[in-house]
Length: 160
Image 1 (cartoon, rainbow, N blue to C red):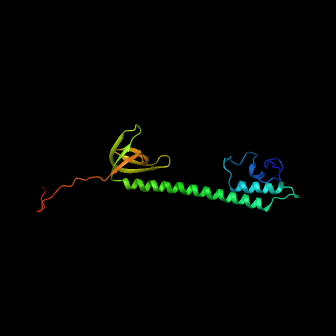
Image 2: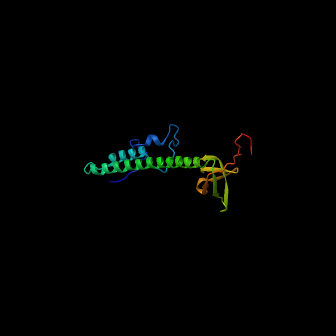
C-alpha cells in the first residue's frame, strides 16, 4: 500500500485543518510520541489511500488495533507503577522517622543520626533529614531504634 503525506495542500486530506490556525500559522505542537488521535488519523488516511481492488485485510486491521490497545495499556501500567513506587518510597521513609539511621553521603562517608523529617520532591524523590542535611532514601545503610534517656524515679515518687 503506498504511503502519502497527510500534510499536502489538498483540503481533502485528514488533519489539514488541524495543522494551521485561522491566521495561517502553525497551530499544533510537535510531539515525539504518537497518541490515539494520531493513530486514528493515520488509519483514516490508510483507508482513503488504499487500492479498492486490494482493500486492507480485516486481520491486518484487527492486528493493528490490538497492537495499539496493548501499547496504551503498557503506557497506563508504566505510569501506575511509577506512582506506586513513589508511594512505596514515601511509606518506607515514614518508617524511618524518629529512628537512628546510618547513611552514606556523597563522599562515601558514613553519617549516623536521627531522622527528623522527610522531604518528597518530584526530582529527588524522598529524602531523609538528618542533622539538618538531606540524604536520599537509597543511601540508608543501617536502621536502629532510637534509645531515649528516661529519668529513673524512686518508688516514693522522688527522682533518684
